[in-house]
Length: 382
Image (cartoon, rainbow, N blue to C red; front, side, top):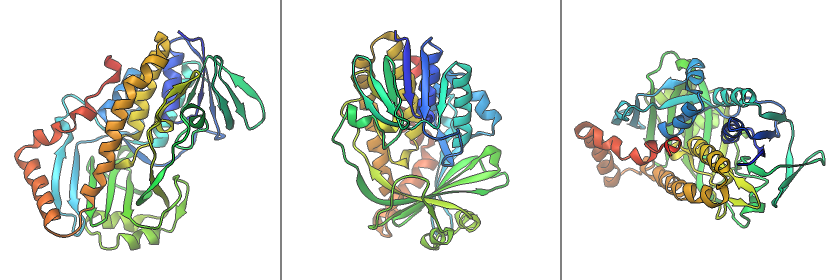
């Protein structure tokens, strides 16, 4: 059992891990470069495997009180007129709940849980270097150092700690660019809708009790864009790219007033997740593409497992062996999903859509069971 820990990064995985450790009696300090816990991004999907961790932390009710939407279905639709191709009934998920959550709401709930657990939140503290060792140390932008028995890097795809733990990896542009926006809504159906077009798709789902809709639009293109959600774009550019999309998504795109754009890059999963008492967590270890909505859920799983391993004194031996195989499998599945949404006109698209339609009507239970290995994974039950 360790006595002290430092967490770098005040996002979903970092806050969850800090809380889990503090509740086990560890003295935890968390450094976050932003000066405040603020709204970053927009919506995210908390599937049952991620919700299992939040439930174990006692935070499910707090999320629901903030307007998290209990999802009922995934609708796959053709882009032209919005015709429904297939419907996956999420209510068939064996006593499991699937939530649509605003990212800021989840981070706020986790931050309060961390404070309540005694985590020392140090905001506006950028970490510039991390040195593994028997007592690992970090250096802040101010020049001050800090050390602990373990340092946990939950600081995202450009992690300052990853080069010290698992150097040598390089990202590659996937040939896809994404846009993210939210628009006002009034009592939309509690479902995620994927509008599938040639080389493009748009995902939409409700947030905050149905008062807004989250939009993520993806296009295949040769010209790359920078990573990160903070790059603003012109809403008319988004509308031009998806001008031939009809049905409900056309109405949503017409309402967009502010939008961000970023390039989608494939990052290799880290070969080593822990070295010299420095651990990688979430995107710092295994960035994933958004096509299975598992980025936040994997980070929550990591947080719980790492905290449990550190509490048991087995982190170096068990953390990576428990987590890496699953992370790779989920990431590979996400990477292959885009092509299913982006099929071009022709026999392959027609047959694929026919198969989806027949499967969802004739064998809806079987359609959902293909996701059991993702959603049924409960790290808190181990």
